[in-house]
Image 1: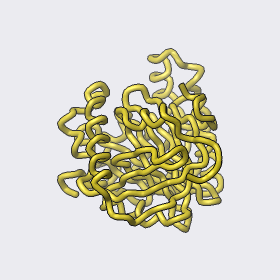
Image 2 (image 1 turned 135 degrees about the vertical axis):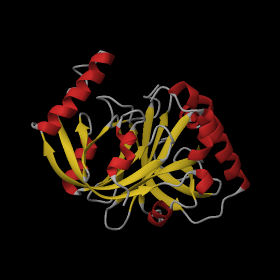
Image 3 (image 1 turned 180 degrees about the vertical axis):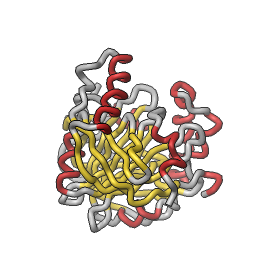
Image 4 (image 1 turned 60 degrees about the horizontal axis):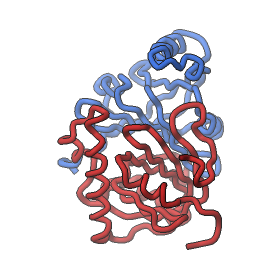
Length: 135
Length: 162
């Protein structure tokens, strides 16, 4: 499995990531993520601001698929995830909040982008999506 | 076309042909979701979308069995206006047609036209899209505003997202 440290550029927030979740009834849902945070070699975190459907799906079904893109090469990676826990305080939450507040202040949307909590996922697999010339 | 309310109008049809990024969400029988890039999307009628995925997108193609639920998220790469349709797969496993190749070419060139405005080198855009594609047809039954922000996830009526 590709190590998360090898794809660190994907977590700089330059290109939005996508999170796919699935309801208990088998209906997929896609949501944009402005930024994904690498917690350690086996975990990533996402900021929970608006994702009502995503939250509902994860409560019923912890499986998720994250697609993130290296902004330099445009190579995309699929990360198979399992929702581990939610945090509304602590080291990870504070780091994510600081990042969100910087973005919000730069865009004048501090109230709109208020962070509710952070979802932490365990990374089960990382798959590189072939680029066209390799396809 | 089957009965029911209209979920794709002319304006949304034009939106699909702009500088958009499109993704297909599917899930397997165990509820594990997948997300794969769409290489072309067009309205077949007011309730059906034809989408093209890479022939090497094995997971998405395996998930796309007739009757399976699917999500199609389309985002203008410049404005971030985003729309998500939910629906069911009604056709899968067909061979691509000459029209599909024309759709693929149009999608890639429209993406390329907007890419420089968002910092993506136009000469790299071709790397994102496959040469060989497989068509899927999805009958949609719901549409949502997915533009990033507090309104994301709001269910829409066609015509309310202008």
